[in-house]
Length: 267
Image (cartoon, rainbow, N blue to C red; front, side, top):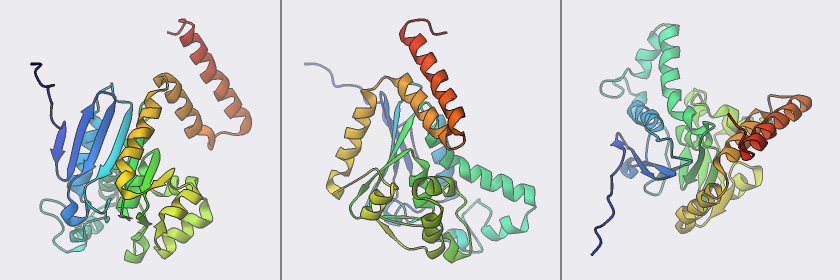
C-alpha cells in the first residue's frame, strides 16, 4: 500500500490568519468567524508575515475567510480607551508625534500592500459582509470573486475617519472618482450585482460555488506561462501612470524581453 502524501500543515496559523501552500497556489484564510473576522493590529502583522513567507513557487494567492462574513472591519475594541492588549489605543496614537503616528499607520498598511506584487496574482473570495478594513482587504487583491450575498461598505467616514488601509486608490481605479466618493461618503452597501456591473468584482456566483469558481480562475491563470503573466500585469498596473506613447514604449520593451526569452536569448 502506498504511503499517504506528506501534509506539511499550514505555514502560518496565528492571530486569525492561516497560510497554506499547495505548490503554485497559496491560500490565506481569515479564521475568526465568531467575530466575523474582525481585524486588529495583530491580524495585520500576521497578514504581513504571510506575504513574507510565500515561497518562490507560488503564482496565485487566494484570500478567503471562514464563516458567513468575509470581514466586518476593524474590531470595535480599537475604539475603546484600553484598545487591544499590548497595543497602543487610538487615543494613544493620536497623542503621539506625527512621525510615530505615520510609522504606525505605515506598518498597518503593509498587510494590504503585498497582494499586488508583480510575481503573484491575488484573488479575493468574498462572501457576506466586507466592511471598512474588510472592504479594503478585498480591494488589496488583483481580482475579486464574490458570493451573491456579498455586501461591501466603506464605513470609516461614519466613524469620523478616512479609509487609510490602501483602499482608496484601487476603489477609484475600479469604479471612478464620483462613484468611489459616493460609496465612501455615504457608507452604503454595494451588492454583488452592482459590484460586477461597476468592475469592482470580476464575477459573482452563488455562495456554495464560491470556492469552486476561485479554483477555476486560479487554474486558468496557472495554465498560462508565468513570465507572460508577470510582464502583462506590470504593463497594466503602470498604464494609468503613463501617457499613450509611454505605454506603447513599455509594450515594446516588454515584448522584446518575451521574444528573447522564448528564443532562448534572455539573460
